[in-house]
Image (cartoon, rainbow, N blue to C red; front, top):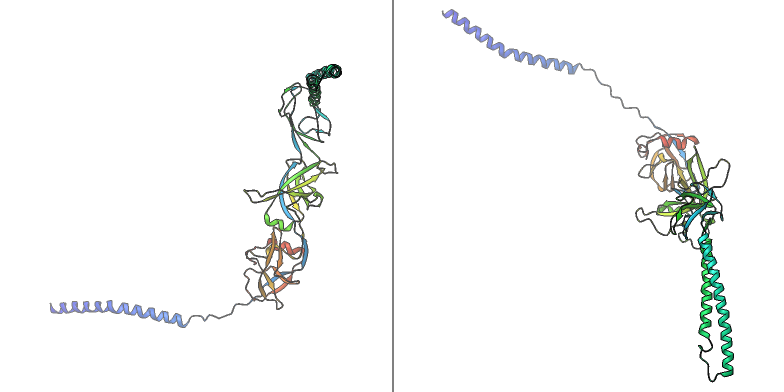
Length: 415
């Protein structure tokens, strides 16, 4: 019995030792393996990154004398446009064959004729009243002469005007003048039965027909002159600095105003018309703050080879000739960033960042007034992240690439 108990105790003791020894052995083995990995790991070779000098495309800038034209737009309207409104009542008995929408007519042609018979009767009545008034004047003059002679023979003292029939004679003269005035009025009304065109023009629309009875003040048609077309062109106040435009044009001549070229897509092609700015309107637009300049184009319906007429209602783009500016540098748009900075290459082919004085920015170019010198080299491509003083390699851009490359480059990558 004792022998069995001692064997059990020895067995339990050995199992407890194993639980302690095994974890220690596993830990020692892990440490040994880790040490071996660290000792026998491959050595990394330290290599410095190869420095590459970027290749950039540059342009050499030269100052120029440029005309800074102004872009605007507007709608063509006739300079003269009126409504045909009768001054007499009556039935329309004749219409001009061209009195239809789009019809042409010449100055002095009769466009509308109203039945004149009522006004012919009025002329005849006025002539009759004149004849009666002239008879009355002659009778009164004879009676007044007779009264003066009788007073000289029989009268005593100073005669009264009534005795000499002076009031009666004055009344006869007044009735004669009234009758003559009635005749003038009747003839004037008769002349208004024929509505003559005051200018050569075209019909915009018509509201009447043959045989219709019209009243004074009723709109019969709308016509416009074809001698001159106008376009109102909105201008910002800062754009006026580039134009030879007189705001006070009382002593100016229309033919001396800035030239303007109008263009529009018409009949499947780009058409152009030449004109001039003749005046500026007298006040700024209260809603937009813009000033409208008025351009005139003479003979918009002149027959030229392949040139369609400049019709009212056509939307046109306008380019107004500006005044000349000297010593201006013309750069492609990608050569200047939003902060008005450009990349400049110095004599040692190192990159410099220079701030420019921008005169005007346009969609296809940037005009610089100052900040550059003749012959300066500006980067237009090849730099993604510019660093002041970095060394670069130079590749001159071909003339046809100067603006093409800049237009394709990202403005955010080049200052």
